[in-house]
Every structure is written in C-alpha cells, then in structure tokens.
Length: 426
Image (cartoon, rainbow, N blue to C red; front, side):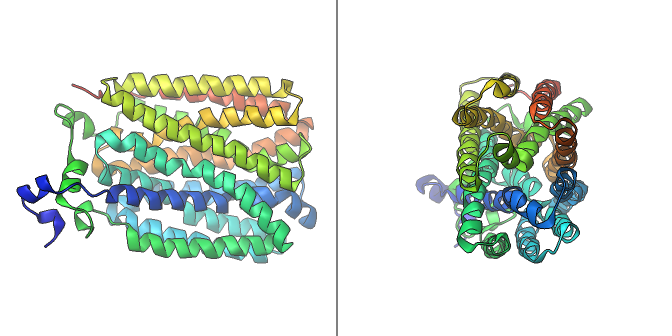
C-alpha cells in the first residue's frame, strides 16, 4: 500500500522517513558539481591565457560570458519550473551543462571558448530557482533555512574542490583540456542520478511515508497567512534584488578573479593556488551551514524573522566590509588566505537568501521569484568579471578592486534592510 495514503494509526505509529533530506543531499551534490564546472575556467585561466595570448580585458569578457545567458534565462527558467516542475528542469539542465563543459575541451581560441561558456550559462540557469522550488515543496517553514543553506553551501564547497580537483587534473593529465572533459562526463552521470531521485511532489515519492508527509505539510498555528502571501511586496522584491546583486558582485568577483589575485598579487603557483582556494571556499561552506542552522534555531526559540534575517545578514555584510578594508594591509600570503577565509565565512551567510522566495512569494510563484532574485545576482556576474579586468588593467593593482568589493558589502546590507519579512509568530 502507498505509504502516503496510510491511515492515521499507521502514521502515528511509524517513524517519519527522511527522504526530504536525501532530496537535498542530491541538490547539494548538483550545486557542488555546478560550481566545479563553473570555476574550472577561473582555475585554468592563467594557463589558457598564455596559450591563447589573452589580455586581462579579454579574460574578463570570457569569464563574464557565462553570465550573459545565465542571467537572460533566469526569469524564463523560473516560470518553466513553476509550470513543469523542478525535476525535469534540474535533471535536464545538469546533463546539458555537462555536455558544454566537455565541449570546452576542444576550444581553439578565445572565441570558441566564449561560445562554450555561453552554452554552460544557459544550461546552468534553472538550478538554483529549481532548488528554491524544492525548498517550498519538500520542507516545512521550520526547516527552510537549513534547506536553503544545504543547497547553497554546495557553492563554496564546489569552488573549494574545484580549485583542488581542476588543479590536480591539469597537473596529472598535463592538459587543461582533458581536465575539462573529465569534469563534463562526471556531470552528465550526476544528471541521470538526479532524474532517478527527485520528485515534484513528496506524495509521489514511493519512499515517503505518511508521517514525513505530515511533517512536510505542517505549518505552526498562526503562521499560515504569513507563509502563503497573496503577492510579494514591491519593496521586498526591490530589496531582494538589490541585496542579491551586491552580494553576487563579491561572490562572482572572487570566483572569477580570486585565483588570478592569488597568483598575481600574492605569488602563488598553480598547486598553492588550488590549496588556498580550497581552504578559502571551505570556510564559505562552514559559514553557510552555520547561518542556516543558527537561523532555524533562533526561529524555534521565538525570534522574529525580521530580527534574525536583518541581524545575521546585516552583521555579515559589515564583517565583509571590514575584511576587504584590512586585506591590502596584510603582507603575509598565509595571513591573506586566512583573512579571505574569514571573508567567505561571512559572505556565505548570504545563503539565507535562498530561504526567502518560499517565505515572501505564493507557492505557485516561488520559482519565478527565485529566478528574478537570481537574475539580479547573475547581472552582477555579467558585470563584475569585466569590471574587475578593466579596473585591474587601468590601475595595475588589486587595491581598487578590493575597495569596490568593500563598497558592495555596504549595498548588500542596505538591500537586506529593505525587505519586509513576514513574522515568524502571529
């Protein structure tokens, strides 16, 4: 008999299954692979730039190209997720971006490499909005901060392992091309696993029992109106977009130019660069998980959503500002890596943003609002690699770049404060 239609007695006597956390384990793995594939070019760029004789500005254009299609397809992708469900979009997108990652291995110059990045950006576009949709479908309101960070913490872990894995593959295979091919084939295999595991409705999953289904659908008394708003307020949408855009300026700036900063400003070789990138972004994963579990714990103790989100995200933005101001004064390379690790720890408190679309939007618009939010972040992804390259070429040093990131941290705080958070208790 289907566990989801078992009677009340069976539901009461049976322990709740935990399929929802297996779902988010798969989402976590997809995000890890997503970032490995996305950051592979940043790790290989010093090598590729020498082979293809690319200027800093051209490097910035190629690094930016991913975000052109990624940003363009965020809102259409979010609409498709709401209409057709996250399972199809997420699994299909994973297989497609694995193909484009593999095609990058046969690039013959800057133009062909740019074209593969356009394809990669288009294919990866649905992933995070689909994750936000799964958050709304599979998790109760009391679990969504943890779900958001279990998804988004895969980003810094993927960046961390991307630095180590891609650096190792380039050195071991003596070819950045073979490294890209290996990464692409692994992604295609994971896409097939996603199709087997994910479902658009917990009631349709054969391993979900009635007790887990009841836990997923549970809403604390007095919160239902806040959890299902008729529409998202214009002020909140503006704050969501502004905060995410500023946050993404820092995040994508570090993802695309961070390895080059370590190589050029701090004198790291390829092996040292991979190890430092691993440490820095592992700190980001730690910060992401810390933020999500702390937020849910505070909610369970009766703290209001406004106090938790504004307090945690605002504090993290000020901490990021302070680290970028301090970084140019640190001369020791090990000290610089330590300070960048602190930066990433606080930066990835911003993973909490992925718990906001299910909180602020009606359930049938969560994918769309997630796409709008990620469009704002992706627009930063378009601009910041080029802008960083132009600043670097104009000044010949990274100081102005670091101060720009410090300013973005303050804008991130301002956007967070604009959002009107529904109360956690009535």
